[in-house]
Image (cartoon, rainbow, N blue to C red; front, top):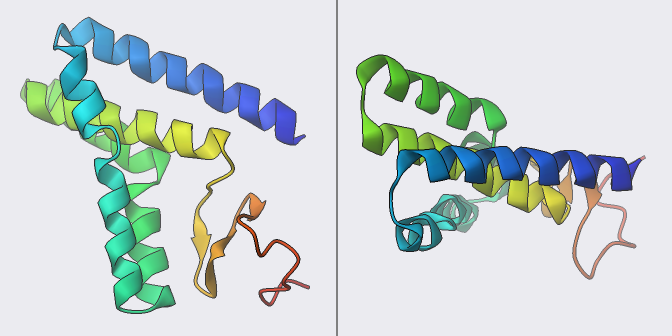
Length: 125
């Protein structure tokens, strides 16, 4: 199942890359902004619950899609780029197993446990 999910996320990432290509903007901009959604990890400086909420907000497929459609409705090329970046980055993260976070630990995601501490229970039953 994990392999099937990876292929799905690769396909979705290709859609995001194609959408960015259609904007006609420079690829250096795409590369420069690609990891900006990871700034949301700073929420973990407060605590796990706040960190998970902020991280999940900026790594939810829906946010990128909503921003993209708002951009299309308002004819805003910068919002369009932001939506595409959020969507593409989320696909990229999911390819490597970085899913939406549970509030008990950064390593506990909806796709399973990530990182070196995979054998730790993290409250999973």
